[in-house]
Image 1 (tube, rainbow, N blue to C red):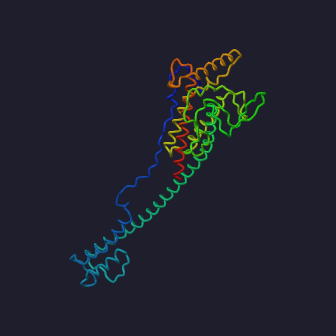
Image 2: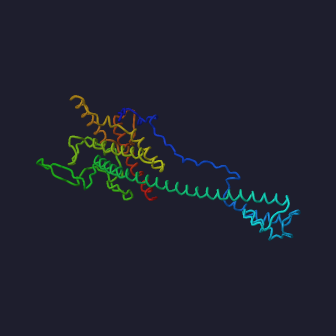
Amino acid sequence: MKPLAQNSTKPIISTRNTPQTFTLNKLAKPIVRDDIFSLPPAVYGTIYLTLIPLFGFVYSTLPNMQFNHENVGFLEAMYFSTITVTTTGFGDITPTNTFTRAFVMIEATIGVVSAGLFLNAITYQREENMSNLMDAYEARKEISYAFARLHSHDSLITLNMNTYLNRVNQLLGIESEQTPVAQSDREGRANLNRSPDLPAAPDAKVPQQLIGIHEPIPETLAFTNLQHLFNASARLTDDPRKPLIWYYYQALDELVNSIENLVRETETYRWADLESICIQYLSDIKSYDSSSYVLAEPNFEQQLADIQAQRQQDMLLISEYPSDKAVELSNENSLNPYIILFMGIQTTIDFIKKFQLRYQEIMQTI
């Protein structure tokens, strides 16, 4: 993480690394030319069946129609038209002149062609229906896999969110009843206190609507709550040589890495709003980065003394920060790194709420 200058008026955001959202469009199916040879099966079937009464009427009404039977009526003509268009050809009724034979040839040809087109259209329609069914099945399978991958990543993300909230609460002086902390009695002996009385801690409660989040979320954040950043952790599981803020940044890095893996390894483009929430958060939290200044490590003893003195002065200024004054960056504000930290905490808590609510909506669509 790059250090942020103290006198900057706003977080540094690199436009070169600003994430962009791309929309993936489905591949379009090949366009089939709409001509006489690519009509629906019903059209060819209708043409084929229409030939029978049409040519039956022609055989029975047009002059110069001659058959080996005299006085061929409409029923006989319909019969002859049927055996002609079906290429049955019993031979009991036959044309006897060229004019009649020409019409018989036309009907037989149209009948054979329309029958072939009808069968071809039926086959194509069946293949297309099967292809659509397979496409729908593959789409459902891909979505199912996408849900599974999203759920597996969310399990880790939810764990990291709870860890992050736990460290934020530790910074603000909020300890859950399940967190054992060590305190010393009058004789210097360590003992356990599951609910320490830390003054000026903001109100916090576990959000009932966020499934999976069991850590309390601060209802209100005050800049003055950050006056204990460099206190040693009193938890039995922490290294007492490291300050509270070190554990905060460790939890933040783990959360950011899990969000990056989610965007990188899952099909978040299927849920554009969720992807947008994640990408916007990653962009914001990387701009709210003052860890290099806050966690600065000295190279020699004199520098250590200077850093410790500066930190004590900064914490004093934070504790005296007016409650009615807006928390915002300034060109001449030595608290800018801590103001950026404060903005990052606000941004992350807001992200956790938005992410969990949208994730629950997605899971309800399964």
